[in-house]
Length: 314
Length: 326
Image (cartoon, rainbow over all chains, first blue to last red; front, side, top):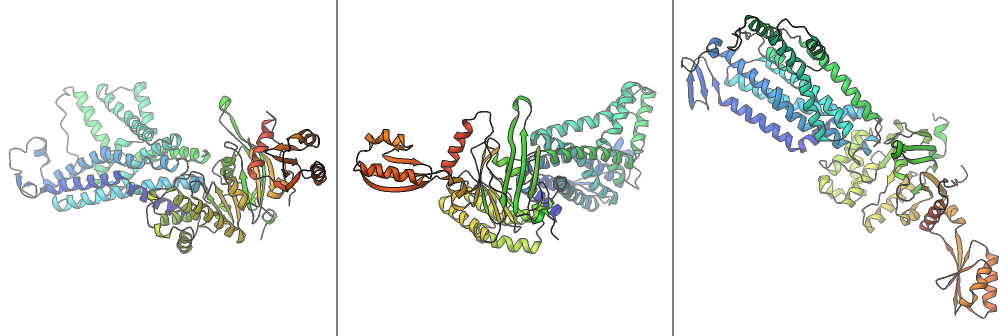
């Protein structure tokens, strides 16, 4: 009863905020834009048939021609959109929408009554935390469900695996929200919580970027930087890998791993091989290990935030 | 079955409550060992100057603030027991209710946190909104409420769980005179239902009108505690009004321990013999006596007097004067 009341309160608070409706509007705009484009066996139509582009048109060349059949093409675009939305816009908007929940809850005069109720402080914290998650779950469900239908109806590609992006979006958000909640509880400042969370996101992405760069610059290198980056990648949430996993699950059953030709800048055989190896590694990422270790980090952060919340005098 | 501690007559029995904020040079001792007892079914008033530690004490009772050291019970359970909060209502000072909720939603939300079952929540919400005169505003968002309306709603939320103990921190803050009278009546109504009320207010006249017992908190210690009669027992004087010029009598009056204030002869204490001696003196000097009246100190007088006593002893803690335990 108490947890549900807290979750329901998070919803009411979220509905009251303009950012919630901005997120809904963005979802509708993205979905509508996607619906404007249609695919069939012969080509692509824009603005519901106002303008058409046949596959036989010379505009299709290079990489696109290599993809061949429309379904793969469609899936590739869908995953690209998902990657962009999940990776950046969605998570940033979700952070902005929810970062203020703890600071506002802990404002002088606002927190006293809830704290004086017969529920432990950890439960109060968890109720608010889960409320934020459920709110994002709802937004993610709306986005993925709508785009799933559009991709199916307009792009002629029903991708059941794409629906698994819903929990993945929530998981990615939760990696960041753990930090956001901790900073929110410590500083009681929404702006600080958002900024630190975004900085943390950068830090989380750094080890993978360093390893990728090092593998290209020094394909056989195993120096101190590589070792530290490997350790950091293991410990920190793997935000970048969520997009790979989402893409893989969305394209399940579709031969998406089309061999990528080495980019023009990599004349060196070793570097080209390293790039190929990197691409293969991304396909081999273990969802269980990646998500499991990231959630373990999140759990530690959430426990720290919970402890701080429980010990604070208001 | 009730445990020994649950059978105590005290609704609130606090012993040695201490709380310090900050460290080093910024260290502030908010409470320095507070002992307070509140009987079941009584209205208890906590008063003191700003910064005395009143709100800190209330927050410790409600588990909002952690004490450095504290013993005692609330409704028979150890201080800090969260389960017992289910039967305690609380209205904090300067509360800020979620502006996105309506009055009814707020009552139901807080009642849900207090584990009040759904049907009882709805029934109580309607009853209490009616009782505090807010039925017409039940569906309106709180952001549209005035300060007085917020206080009324706050009182209603404090009663949603049918509490045995109601803790109110400045309940009449921002309320107009009519609203204050309504709140006083509500408090007396609650008392008639055998509910205990712990009232923290700086409006001393309000406390005087409704409280059975009060405690004066100064610099983090209870300086005085007892019933209004007990507190004013030794703070009575007699005022003699005389027709004619009494200035010439000043040396004689002072020799008998009396004083001349604003044309009135003030005889401190409860000494009727001295009063009669002075009456004899006045009659011997052929002065006409208009009235002889006992004058009992108000709470404000007592507070000011106690603050003066404390100020006169810099560094020394005020002397706590608890009444005999029940």
